[in-house]
Amino acid sequence: MPTLETVRLTFPGGLHVGTRGVNLEESGVSIPSDTLFAALMDVYRRDGGNPEAWLQPFPSARLTQPGETADVDCWERSSGDDAPFLLTTAFPFVGGVRFFPVPLPLRSLFTDETLKAHRKEIGAIRFVSEGILRQALESRGLDDLLFPADCPTEPSGAAALQQGVCWLLTDELDDLPEHFRKGVGRRSGYTALRHHRVYATTRVPRVTISRISSASQIYHAGRVCFAPGCGLWFGIQWRAPGTPVGQVTYRETVTRLLALLGDEGLGGERTSGYGGFQFEVGETLSLPDPSPGGLMLLLSRYHPRGNELPAALASALAYSLTPVGGWLRTHGAAAQRRRRVWLVTEGSVVHAVGDGPWGDVVDTRPVYRGSAPSFGLDHPVWRHGLALGVGFKEARDG
Image (cartoon, rainbow, N blue to C red; front, side):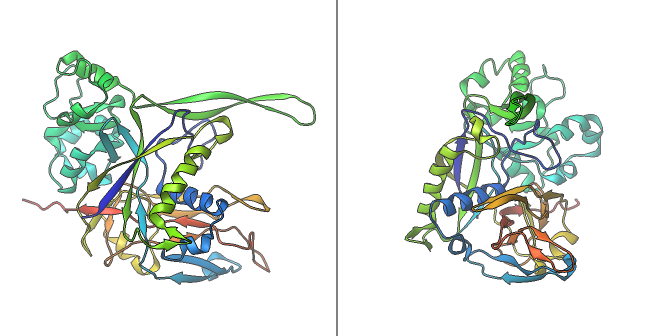
């Protein structure tokens, strides 16, 4: 079973996570695994570490020679399977209840009658608790656990938070913060529970001043604020925590980097106080292991290696892709846009090709094409695409 060391992040000043294709006024709620890895690697470099030494044990795909078109690029692939650790995406937690991405084949775990009667409620779910997740991993029917559409109705086995965005078992209600549990046990209490906000997305007015004319221009930035006792958590699967990097081990290095990141902040708009956090290493979590050739539910983003395609996705139960681009920063060079890479999203259920680890860390440095294609930088720009998945049983008829 993969054992995850859980890390809880609380954000006193709020958080801004940019979403490609969405303007500054919007913000994502979770922090993708590739963003977490990039932040750790960046602060490691600025703390005096060698990024090449940091990356050396991880399977990677480095662009060595750009071509006039992308299909003739030359790549150097490292097939090393010695990744010291794997990361999940950071998902919400509420008190002692951790939430996970909703499995994309969730609809297959309901009968047609339930889907017809509760399609709207099922479609609104974004996060499920550990109790719901374990039921889904076994491909058990979830009809009896769906929270009632009628708020005043007392739930028989499950409840909801954040207007139905977060789904949890009634057995897990005791682990919620006290202010969430007020009145639970009465019908009015369950109504209030449904309306409790785990997080709120707001638009904060900001102003920019012209350096030439001193004219002001107002704009808005999105910010996610978490309720007391709530925040984000992510898991680290340590595969070789004692592997040295520099003078210390990866485990010691990651702990130090999290402390530095807590002061600097994660995400955007950090100069305005967004993204600063306190972290706490919590209990370990064991989940079912994927079996080679079987199905796995992704808790991270995933960039399949060439030898994992098309098998990983051709017969996947359900998956979605997201384009990941954005801006990069580097010492001594102007900000540039990274090359866009497509990643399989969290919650997808794909095939585990081989024994793992699955995926790689891919070079996304900018390339300027033409008669003499050239790199925009003299060093790679890495994007994490190693999968952290858990075993998912395929439903059997009868």
